[in-house]
Length: 254
Image (cartoon, rainbow, N blue to C red; front, side):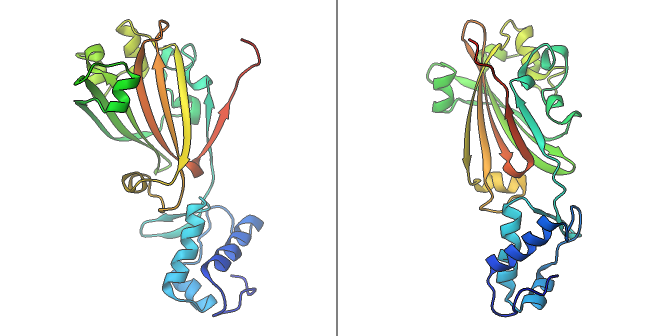
């Protein structure tokens, strides 16, 4: 620990600044253990709540991560590079039987908490999918985990009338995932629209991604369309903002 701070005369932001300086300088390298609350209390002469707030600031910035039963460590930042539109290209992704995720992390992450249900379509979903009133949708929910850390929760919606009886209604959708199954049904997705928004997490999202309340998430809403502009899927993805780099490739040509 540094001796720059004056015990009893600092607030949680100054403590966070001091620890951040040590992380940025390499004094606390990736993977190293960060001083815990008791260490901070002793070093800076502050109350327990102040020490906790200081650590929370660094957690919200994605600089440190708590490991249950072990302590808090400097995050070994191995960003997931999410490249669009490469990840949705049929010839190199789902169309060749590979998961979309393979274009992001090279190997498929662990998928947890997969659930599939038939539900009444929320009004906003029904509008985009161009469904009649009282229509139902197949809803797929799951959590993606990389290096034992949840990094994304996703919810996808499909018109039930379109996918009933297919593997999209099952936990395991098979090689290529849901897009390959839509192609099998004659509704291949070939056009996509993504909308991005950054906000603080809702409580369920915070718990699912193990975030502090003020750590932002990236919400990506993707709509998939057939060649005839029929919407066949809406996917809402909540990303741990500290775990991702979002890269977009495009040209100036029509």
